[in-house]
Image 1 (cartoon, rainbow, N blue to C red):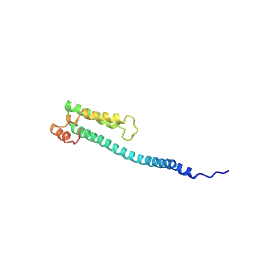
Image 2: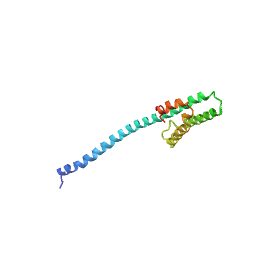
Image 3: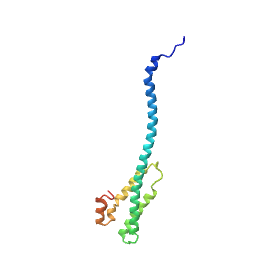
Image 4: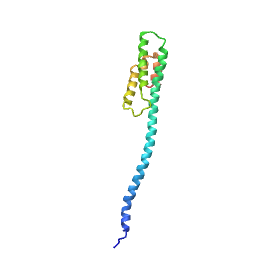
Length: 138
């Protein structure tokens, strides 16, 4: 005796079937949107880090050029500090986002910059402009 499919089974199981299909569709769409959003966020964060490093690098190169003709011991210490900062930035892995110590190295560069804060290099009247007015925002 062949039993025909029960009409009520199709109705009762419809909710479970549609729930499973909707879950699969939602998961696929969420994965796709998540990748896009994650990529966009990563690009934004990378641009922020690049901008920050670029600011430090520009500052260091500028002051290194300004101090190149000065011969006092105090200026020599400033040049060594700038060389150290530039060396740290040269070793920074700009092209490798999977580098394990990326954040630690970035924190070291920030610390070195803040340790030898531009206030030690810039004249007092410029410190107010740079820091109080928020140009460097440190």
